[in-house]
Amino acid sequence: MIAAVLAGGSGRRFGGDKLLFRIDGRPLALHTIERLKKADSITKVVIVASPENADKLKAFGHVVVDELLVGPIGGVYTALSLGDAFVVAGDMPLLVPEFVDFIVERFKTAKKPACVPRWGNGYLEPLHAAYSSEFREFLEEKIKAGHYAINRAIMESDACYIEIESLPEEWRESFFNVNTRKDLGRIRGTRERVL
Ligand SMILES: Nc1nc2c(ncn2[C@@H]2O[C@H](COP(=O)(O)OP(=O)(O)OP(=O)(O)O)[C@@H](O)[C@H]2O)c(=O)[nH]1
Image (cartoon, rainbow, N blue to C red; front, side):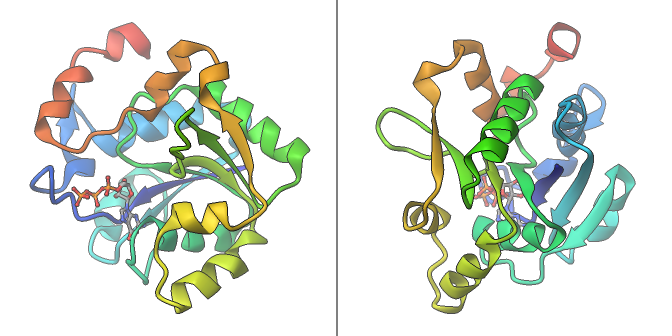
């Protein structure tokens, strides 16, 4: 299964290009990519970048350009042009490879348009989820209608959900994402501990 790393955001809260920001000597996006490559179910990692960032990210893997830039829904839509995909935000440097394998396995057996982790309060984790290429058409309709909320699109589909609270607690670290500079404190120095 392909893994698509979304890298077309503006990094407004971070104040700059967060995916290229170096942590322990390596850009944030690379932390995420290296973790993904450790997942047995992942055969290839692609980066779904904005036209502006495409060149800079080429050093880390195959880049597909997101021409829509309408938010994560456009990133997922672009990724699915390559086939079924596990889609993850590029700013998730602590993702857990075993958890990725678990989601991909569920997706393969469920045969649904998407398999998305869900918290007990109903909150979804759409940028740490597996999608079928068949879901692309549905997303296209939503985008054309100007409905850019990916969570809503998922809930209107026949998706399968993975109840996070029934899983090993340590897997929750996978959802940690960097939004602000303050978040960096949590990952600095984790290299030796977790990689
Ligand atoms: N390809 C693509 N990726 C996106 C898009 N919007 C957000 N992303 C990525 O999705 C992930 C989560 O997005 P956000 O947390 O909102 O990141 P962001 O847009 O960079 O940050 P803010 O501007 O502070 O919201 C990040 O890895 C972004 O790079 C988009 O329109 N296209």
